[in-house]
Length: 104
Image 1 (spheres, rainbow, N blue to C red):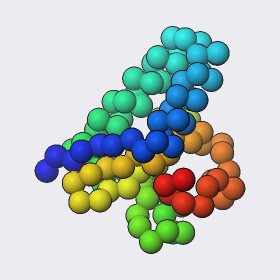
Image 2 (cartoon, helix red, strand yellow):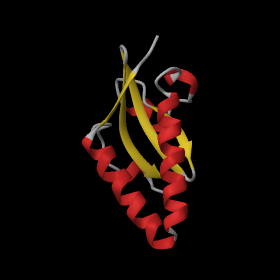
Image 3 (cartoon, rainbow, N blue to C red):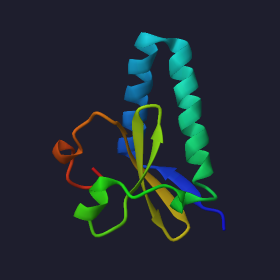
Image 4 (tube, rainbow, N blue to C red):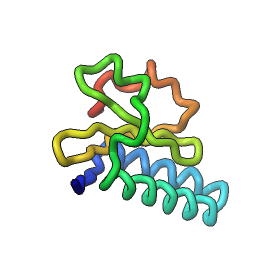
């Protein structure tokens, strides 16, 4: 079964912010990380359940999963044949102080 992957607006903004920050350190490292993230997300088209549940999952009425990419957590949910990328957060970010909704 093939899944359609969609980036939610918050995830797009967080991705852009991460790339911009990484570019300040090294343009080459930013490009490499960005490609690694896209490759990881592409893998979700075929095996979205391969990654573990995120700690946030226990606070919501739906399963939130995560995939780790170079110090960042890609948070997503699976609904039918769609994978929604909800957030891209640095692993050091305190998720308990983050937005309370998986969508926000």
